[in-house]
Picture 1 (cartoon, rainbow, N blue to C red):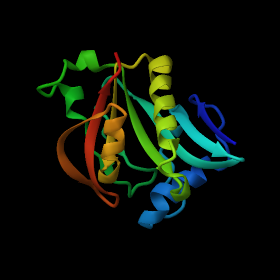
Picture 2 (spheres, one colour; picture 1 turned 120 degrees about the vertical axis):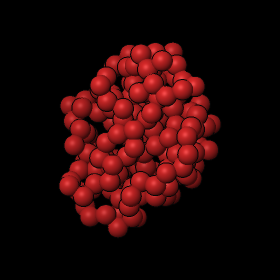
Picture 3 (spheres, rainbow, N blue to C red; picture 1 turned 180 degrees about the horizontal axis):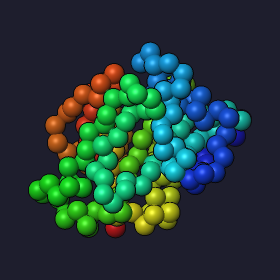
Picture 4 (cartoon, one colour; picture 1 turned 45 degrees about the vertical axis):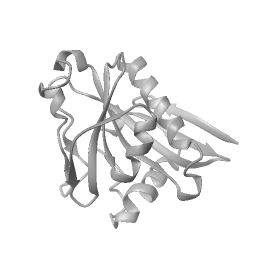
Length: 182
């Protein structure tokens, strides 16, 4: 039986949560075990899909602090690449004023085991995280850095790409995306 779940900041996660995050996002790129963790995981919302006790898909969302622009280390450790800032949170043109975009959340670490892809798992996780960010923090906007193959999925879910393609070192090309929540 398939079940979608979400944990609020500080709540326990199932044993397989980080294993699936590693297997889907870090192991394929040759990263060592441990690279699936992010320093602020304890302050994030985490969602997952479980099937018969196995975690098959994961994702997380965190609140972007009011004085920050979303740039952050991609994983724990000194050798982590830095994901770029979301310029609209600093007042870029063609967006609502930054105050209208706050509070803001960021989606990160979305991954689904190969045999469970294209079965609605990522959709379930994204919907849980979006609703959770609105409820937990009253967010007005969401932000993410999408790998190129994932852009179409996020667009179907109401997200909009902006700016040029850029490289996240060690991960690959990405595009920034946003979604207004109000």
